Length: 210
Image 1 (tube, helix red, strand yellow):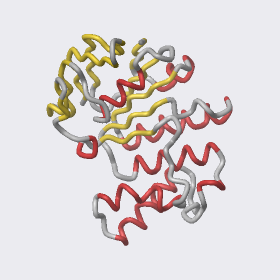
Image 2 (cartoon, helix red, strand yellow; image 1 turned 90 degrees about the vertical axis):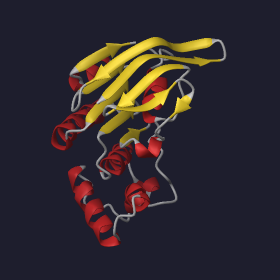
Image 3 (cartoon, rainbow, N blue to C red; image 1 turned 180 degrees about the vertical axis):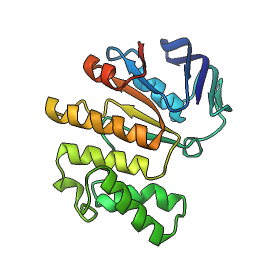
């Protein structure tokens, strides 16, 4: 599903990734594990099409999407969902409006949007939260909204950048189980960044130490 061939990424004189390759099978769960500054988040942004590469090639679902100094397929055309560390929820929109954003971009019918939002909220244990303001949610609830917003457009790949790092141990443990259950149900390919060894071992088919 993801094939990264000999890529290099450099900021000024600092090489973040050099001659780096990675193959991720369809439907698998790969965790990128390592210290801050090792290139984990940069790699996610490169896969998503949010960063260019200085050398090498990237294939998504056998299609060339990036090569040296060129993004061939833009981020919004890659069928990739991204859950950022800060979640990137829009505070001026309520829960339903946050979740339906991607569906509106895809020009899904209004009636279908309402049904899809209702259905995905049930999947993430937030039924009845459609009209709730983001400021009224707990940390765990915000995390579920971010997951719902990503899942509702049914991406082939989901990238997660330390999504549970700000949560306490009990909630972290609960949500990592929910992420695992959702991955098995929706069968998306997961690339997950963390510096938490226990989290990595729980979620991963394969762990890449960076």
